Image (cartoon, rainbow, N blue to C red):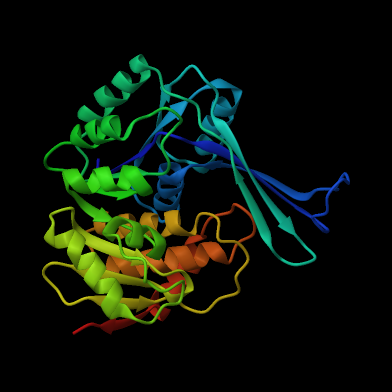
Length: 316
């Protein structure tokens, strides 16, 4: 097995549009969709769409969990549900058609019992993939210490990729992982820097310095800073930093774009592509996802079409 993903806090993403979001009125919904969600599941879905081999591990409970399993099977995603007592959560994504604005509501995730957490550790210890992607939020009541235990259960031969937030991401860096993919706000939190620019920031020197701080501390071998429409900055210990620019496309929805970046990246790495080329594949996948409506993810033909258009600029 080349790739496995971990989703502790999956969901059913329910998306729809309304003519206009206004209070105190019953609004008629259209374009209703239901998709499996959660970071690791989205990564696995993208890898599958791009022709890669992956096994998705996820917490499965209740009727919503059964529905997620059915949707994953319909997409051909090889998955391994880990039973939990509480039902999988739902998220809501609403588009206001009058403004084009999107509203996203994330519901709390099902807590994991002590026995369920132990089962998770057993499953991860039994894996030996080349790449293990641990992506998404933590369920309610799951401590960062246990999260660290989960990461530590991975085989020493496995390259661990983490895409999460705040204390969980900080805990991952204390242990040391192969790659992280923070956005600017997350990078600022990790490095206690408050002056990093917003999306579209052109000052790569400042971003690079923050990323190098993480690498020098042994927190990660690779820091891939997601810059939204401005692409990403790739920083490693061994090579000059490199900014990769996303192709310009119509923006329809940002849902799943970051997960798609990771999915495209890992799919390429698992095929043996060089890191910088794999990052370009990831950016193409993320860009292809923002072209789709609601909670849809990238289409393979769009990724292949956009990949040659990803711009690359070597650092100093």
